[in-house]
Each structure stands twice: as C-alpha cells, then as structure tokens.
Length: 304
Image (cartoon, helix red, strand yellow):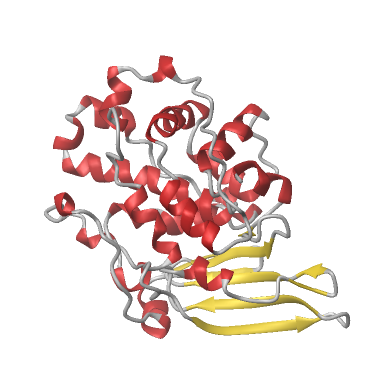
C-alpha cells in the first residue's frame, strides 16, 4: 500500500516493502493476558517487531507528522467515551481501539521529538499554549485534545511510567541522567470514575510502556539493521544523509548508532526510512543531549 507523497518523499508501506526489507526480528512482549485477544491481524510482526493494536495506527501518526502534507490526513475516531459507556476492558474490540488510539503518542514523543520524559515535555508544551509550529506537535494537537492530554498526564504523574524507556535512551545519549523530579500534579480533579475506567489507579492498564520500546529494539541487542546509508556533500563536508532501516523494530537505536553527529561544525541531517511506515522524518543530533530528534531544538529540550 502506498501513502501520499509527503514533503517530496514517497512513503510506502505494506507487503511489498516488507518483502524487500523485512527480516526476522524478536517480537516484543505483550504480556500473557493479551494472548487471547482478536488483534493478531492488526500488523506484521516481522516489520514492526510487535503486533496488535499498539501498532495499528503508527503509520498514520508518522504520516500526519511527516510534513505540512500530513495535514490532509485525519486521526482515528476517539473511542474513549464509547469505551467507558460500553463495558471497559470487558469489551475487547473497544479496548483494542482505545489502545490503538493512545499508543502513537509515546512513539511521537520519544522518537520524533527525542523526549526521554514525555510527561514533562507535554506538560511544558501545554503550559506554552500548545504551539503547533512543529509538524510532530501539530500532529499531536490534531490527534489528542488538551483535555485528553490532561487525562494522560493525570496518569503519568501518579504512575511515573517512563523510567525504563528513558534509561535506555540515556544509554544511547550523553545525558547524565533523566529528570528525576516528577511533573507537578495539577490533575487531581481529573481522576473521576470515568477516568479510572481508562487509566486505572496504578500501573499501565493499556500496556503502552510494554510496547513503545520496539523502536529501540530488543534489549539483547537484536533489532533493525541499516540496509543503506547515502551521504551528500555540500563542499564543506557531509551535510545530509539518508538511512534506510530494515524494519520499524529498533530503527531509533540504529539511527543513534550512526556517526558523526556533526561535520565542520554543522549538524548532519539524516532522512530516516523504515518499513512498513516509510519516511520517519529528518533527524539531527542534539549537541546538548546527544539524542536524535526532529524539528526545533527548543521543543526537543522540553522533554529532557
């Protein structure tokens, strides 16, 4: 299946790209309680490194964040109210829809904006008035309303959920440690019975954190491999390159393992492509954090 051309780049997905570039990669753990759900058709495990509703809308989210052309795409319907009204987790179809609706948020935050702490980043961004002069943040603003993001932050401030993924990102960066101070809890009033039906009272009821780390690959070290890199010289050194990863699973780690971060004092811009999503964006490495990110550095700093 081919997507629209975004930002001058043709984004492709589906069986053809998977056959050409897909390899065998480990499947990220989904938890034993998920094994009997009717979601196995949602994706190709070989291409994503995962399956089920956690990856159902990932291509759409990345396409929406790709460039201004992504503004023609619409987010999926918000299933939250229907989920609460119609039985919560006992309704497996709506439970899958709810997971699929929320899962892309962490991928865009961690691996688009390069945030180790999505809770801090989103909280600070909302406090700024939620500006949308960045394609990733514009996609987030179109997908999740400030009210929905407030509900997410009400969960994050009590669950402290980002420690594991943040630690893995720190291991790839020059950050000494992640921000230990939790986001100030201004969300007590949001924790109603309806809110608890979605977010619970502790833990990770949507299993978001078990699955977002697929972009970092398995902790054993296996994951995406770099199929190809191409570099362009502007006369002063390498200024731009393209990286094609073998799969979505582990693509961010593959990007972080590329060097150099700068040539002749200039950041190297890297276009990243990974099936089955296609073009994931143009990245550069922060000289402050050492992390790869898209867009403006001032927004990258919000979540680190």
